[in-house]
Image (tube, rainbow, N blue to C red; front, side, top):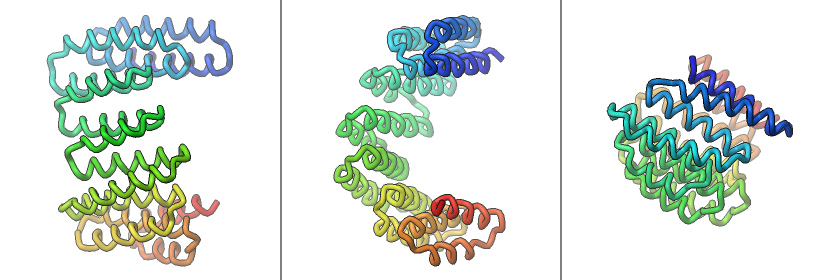
Amino acid sequence: DPTGQVRALGVLAEALARSGQTERAVRVADRAEQVAGSITDPSGQAEAMSGLAVVLARSGQTEWAVRLTDQVEQMIRTITDPSDRSWALHYLVRALTRSGRTHRAEQVARTIDAPSLRPLVLHNLARALAESGRADRAEQVAGSITDPAEQADALSGLAGVLARSGQAERAAQVADRAEQVACSITDPSKQAGALSGLAGVLARSGQTERAVRLAGHAERVARTITASSTQIKASRALIEALAHSGQIDRAEQAAGSITDPAEQAGALSGLAGVLA
């Protein structure tokens, strides 16, 4: 499998680069590029080349990564299948972002036609922009996602990135916006999912009181629907939030109330992980 071989060689090249074996890392990356170039399917070659570009960018080989992204962009123009083209563009956006070409990454992201894929690409782009210090643009990109559930998820993820980077006030503002969007969702299942996701982010960011409130709200919404997976997700968000806030007894009670044995075991395992 050439694509798998490129991936494995890329991992090896990155490991070598991190250990200071630069020359050997370059030789392995050269071999990976040769194997990627031998792939006859354009979409498969675009995936392999994009993945290698990501590895090169992480290893400090930015110019090489940029050259590969240019090749991939040319290659994608030959792909006629709409689904294959959308996925190839998805891989390209990731490579462009890692290479520092965020403006071009955003341009390419907005050419993706697949409605199920475009929000994911914009979500990942917003996260990358925030991690590179461009919080304003990151929030604009996340806010441009038209589906409310996807937008709430992207804003929640952005709030988590900002919190981890020490921007607590800005993170709280983005979380406010995420909550507003989540509460506007009319589908109960999607609303419960969005609120659960935000509650988890807030719990891990130290905003435990607010996390407990949102998780409780999510659980109440989830009880109005029959989708057990959504109910369990909401329950686990509540358990995590309660544990982070020090309410261990309540967290254990909530975990014990899950009727599915496997899911209950998973919830208890997650609780143990928080307490460890």
